[in-house]
Length: 192
Image (cartoon, rainbow, N blue to C red; front, side, top):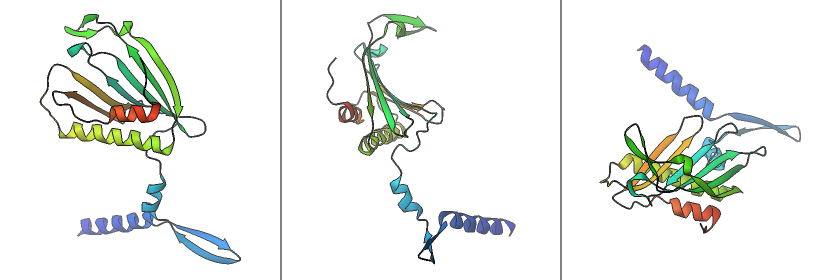
């Protein structure tokens, strides 16, 4: 019986917290506006969760060197002083120089060279495109495992405060991740 009372009390408190009242005085008349949570959620930007002291990192690693990987493209998304999200895009190149780390062959990250470094302040449409990509990578990750091969593109989304980390290895099947659409929408067709 006590559990039922606790459950009911919790429901009442949750209902009260979702409908906050705001008292407004106009022309000496007091009116009450009810806070509509669903309407307010629609006003929030798609990447609202990126805080000023956090960075969202989206990384793509190609496969021009087969199972050892290849070049990397990295987006760093962070808020500036004006609360806008700024995207920094880096693209590197790496020679085919396989080294052994703990008995595993890897490309030598010390030989990576940045070939493109650019910035852009995002608008709400850009944020939506990025949000769609993150949702797609998460969906593909949860639906796996997929038949695989030794090579494939690797997609990783993570933040620096370690509350988000999703990876998807696109091997075997050519799954549509939306990565190249996102990159082209944000920065246009890129050379190099």
